[in-house]
Length: 278
Image (cartoon, rainbow, N blue to C red):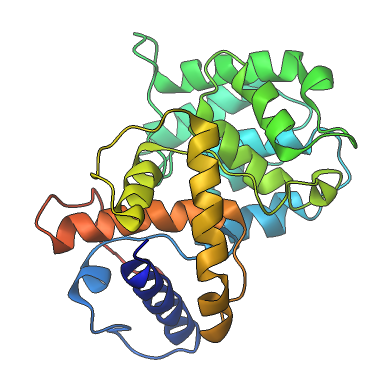
């Protein structure tokens, strides 16, 4: 297990966030890769869109049993200006949703966030109609899907994954939001749950010295390996002042490490350059 590059990325990415928050002028790093390309924060709760969702929707409606549905809307759209124009989406109003997003597009305004690539699932319908149909199904089954006091994150994630059009990545994003409030805040696997994606599989392979594209037998094997890395770096994270990460944040860091290493090793480039916003 080689964690040097992972710990370097975590420490320097967090340092960039703190320098920027302190009002220091650019550049916030001497690392040319981190200065040029867009990388998420070490902790998801520090991301700009997550801050908006937390302050405007999640915290004010923490007691809403259908908060999970609002988080699904938030992550499928993932753009605060659009979400603000929509308003808190409970009860669900498909016509309002479609009208707001179509109006923004007609005005030439940004509709969707860039971080998540939500496609139209290969259908000929406009993306807004496809997303609205996914949300229709989610709303119809909301009473079954709602987080329960006896849930762990994995069981809630599994119910979301069973929904048509709601794949692993997006289900995990909703879990990451909803686990910040009860009842999932008390889930027994709060710090251990994560769902692998292509980037975090490659990132974990890099840390473990496996071939970058080596397959994993199943998600449980990947989670067990993630837990070993989690424990191995915990003392180092305390030493550098970051503290223990939840497994979902570590999973994200591994995905970002893979992006970083692809650039460093000349294997490819990320999709987005870093463009600072006020």
